[in-house]
Amino acid sequence: MVERDDTAKGIEKSRIPLLRDHAAEEEDGEIKRKIWIETKKLWRIVGPAIFSRVSTYSILVITQAFAGHLGELELAAISIVNNVIIGFNLGLLLGMASALETLCGQAFGAKKYDMLGVYMQRSWIVLFLFATLLLPMYLFASPILKFFGQPEDIAELSGVIAVWAIPTHFAFAFYFPLSRFFQCQLKNRVVAVVSGVALVVHIFVCWLFVYGLKLGVKGTMATINVSWWLTVLMLFTYATCGGCPLTWMGFSMEAFTRLWEFAKLSTSSGIMLCLEYWYYRILIVMTGNLKNTKIAVDSLSICMSINGLEMMIPLAFFAGTGVRVANELGAGSGKRARFAMITSVTQSLIIGIIFSVLVVFFHDQIGWIFSSSETVIEAVNDLSILLAFTILLNSIQPVLSGVAVGSGWQSFVAYINLGCYYFIGLPLGYVMGWIFKSGVKGIWAGMIFGGTAIQTLILIFIVMRCDWEKEAGKASMRIQNWSTSRDRTRHCVGETSKRHTF
Image 1 (tube, one colour):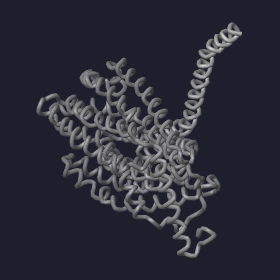
Image 2: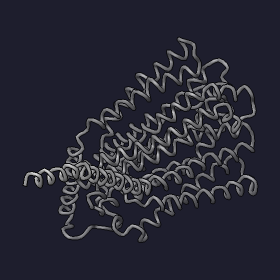
Image 3: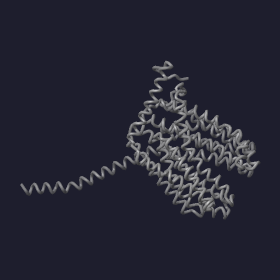
């Protein structure tokens, strides 16, 4: 009996490691399965978003390329309009539209599908009003540019071109809410296909207007109007003609309610993203005051072009992360929201590391893509290590900003951006560039390590200490409050059983 018991115990002990190994294998397999599922959900947004962002970014690049064949003055003028006038307003309206990523994303996760169309209409109203307030930048572009020291001939021509850009300006107010509306219900493929069609049309229209009809620089800018409004009309038609049966219930008077609260959230989102968007544009302005300005600006512009193109990938992850976090918080799962955030940050970081290594590896060759000047190429080579660091940090920071958008932290992060970028980064860049006479490298290094790096570390600390279940509760309360307000509005206008549409 004793031997039998000992034998049984021995057999039982021998099985324990096997059971543990089996349990560990099952747990490992479960984690891999969850990562794969989350990756598929994420890339349903990120993949098409990369394509659509590269396509829309290419519209401006192609326009400048066609303008370059008209003359140096035309190229300089249209570049200033695209990068300064349009760029400033685009950044603000793009940021304001990201409020939809919070509201639509959480509503979609909570299966409040009918609210997505109402939110988009509110965003149209708010962005259209803000676009109207920003019109003076286009109407008075010439005196504004002269005030900031631009040459007389460039400022005058830029003022003419800026007026022709006004239709594109208002297209932004409708396009960005539409793209977020599709994005939050995982219909990014629609936006990608429409962007691809618009890009092909844009190339043909550019050729027709510039070489066929010979409309000059005004015609070149007009091509942007055609492409952007074509994009808006295609997306609007798809959304309102049966493509989104669950989320579009027709135009509603509810869109005119709670506009002030919506405007405040939109403004917070706009400020948060604009402070990031304008940060490196200020770097180019600061560089223009250094010695050997032409070489400094040329080399930095090349680096910013490479960074801008690669930045489309982190911005796509920004969109994907915002939607996934908002969806899971709206569904009441803080744990899955946290897992979505970790998965997105990890994958974006891996891509950032790959591109950073490529920049370091080809540091002495990337300048040849844009210039044949040995001096400029050497200057780009000298800046390549800073470009690599910028790409690496930008693979993390936008994704964390996407977490902030998905969670509704826009106002809080706006203060962080303001402090890190404009009270630490810019002063440190000025000190290193002029006081320590380090030139463009000093300015850029100060802005990277004093602004972007500190901001990234703060955001990492915030998301690591975040109580995600509490955030899920806040999201549920937000959805409930907005839905309750909607029900009160219906009752006041006599809509107790049916949405008032027209």
